Amino acid sequence: MIFTDSGIVLFRQDFREADRIIALYTLQHGRINLRLPGVNRAKGKLKALSEPFTCAAYRIYARSANVLGTVTGGKITHVFPRIRQDLKRQTLAFHFCELMMRLTPPHQPSAEKYRLLLQALTELDLGQPNAAFAPAFTLRLMAAAGFGLENRPVLQISPQFWRRMHEDEFSSLDFTEAEDLLSLSKCNEVCRRFLNGYLNYPLQTLKPFGLADEDLPAKPVAQPAKAAIQTDDTTALVPAPAQ
Image 1 (cartoon, helix red, strand yellow):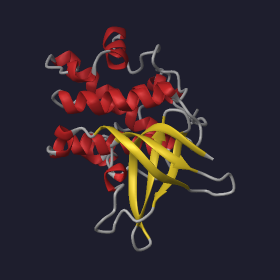
Image 2 (cartoon, rainbow, N blue to C red):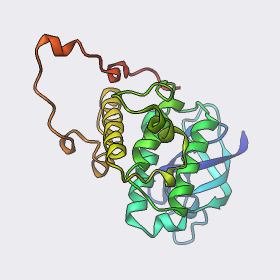
Image 3 (tube, helix red, strand yellow):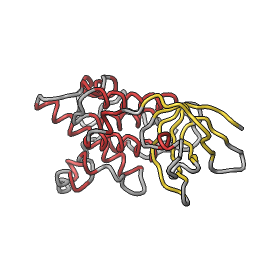
Image 4 (cartoon, one colour):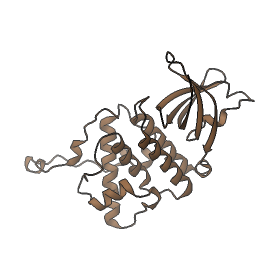
């Protein structure tokens, strides 16, 4: 079967002597793994289609009995040049791609997730990165995966701030007020708790954004039973199958 689908490269790896394997999040087929034969040779013609966070229309040959499909051609639509020229933007882009790799099941298409990743990369390329980019993307991906927190603020975060983290343009989430910065810190905590509970091993790109355990303030000492009665909505973040 030969088909064409729009996709964004999440991950690449050299394979055998001259091939590459990529993980591609596609609009119509979800996350799939593909082989690009011969691209590591000097005259390899499809090398650009295998670069991380490249967005293109891919022509793919796949047989149902094979785990890997094969990229036979394609047309690049976005390369995000400013991301590739700036280390901070690159780090964020790799973080988004790793989240998509780890939080999306294979072969389950979601136009919402595809558009979310494309929007994040586009805004990252055109605008200035800020401290809210990573948690905002994580919260929206959690909502798209069916964890249902977008309409239920937690940790006493104000509904207005929570809504902005889920709906506003990423590049506009540049907070300076003390109250907003505190709410942003709480959003980071929500993301950390969710990822620690859902993933079997940590993301490689967590630490630069302060989401790893060692980058957060020490957890408070357990309080007497009376304090334990207080509710913490983030206990509802029980891992469930990704959608």
